[in-house]
Length: 296
Image (cartoon, rainbow, N blue to C red; front, side, top):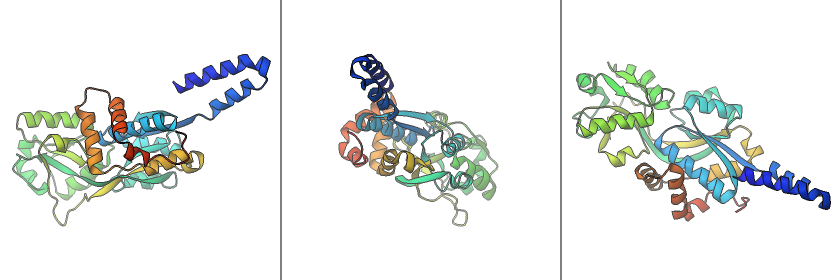
């Protein structure tokens, strides 16, 4: 919409140039100053929710043209490191260590958007085991599988490369996607079947169903509480300082993000509409994100 408006302005300036001399140049110069943001995010509940929130704030409050792209973790990091995306909205530093090492020097850490993450293997509360070590004894009840998300996700890599060999699990890790995993979880809970999934907080599934993380052995701890960061391309602060500052200012508490995610999941409206409504209902949160340099 903004691009159409600016194209019209350039056309109008061209028509006036014959009499005013300066209109065309000033009008078209304006289009070169269009503020843009290209944000990549994974197809995970929390990233979907707050990336759409970032989009509507940038559009409505800061006059940006915004493109958001859902991508698997590996391609997303690659795109940011190559400069085709401005930022990756959901870096889990512990889980994404291999990507951060691979692209060291090509990314800039813009700070935490959320603190207090949890992750691991989770089961419905009615499942009568409490530890990862007990999985093998009941593998048949789980169909011999762990239901996962997209293959490049950090929790999938650590499950495949660390947890399964460390606990000597005789179970297959199935890759799918965040929505496919929660759909499988829904089916299992509806029928009170046993299922084990790769899970993480923040996520709306813990508000919808009674779930529990399987405990890790003291000498076999893989997952620990952590944070979610936003990673920008290496030159973002120099080329788009206002955008970089906005992303660095973004912070959501656990109650705030839980509220946003639940509204997204339960609404019949599209995610953008829900995010816009949440923005309008929480002005004190949003105002803290907007840099003083931003044109309101």
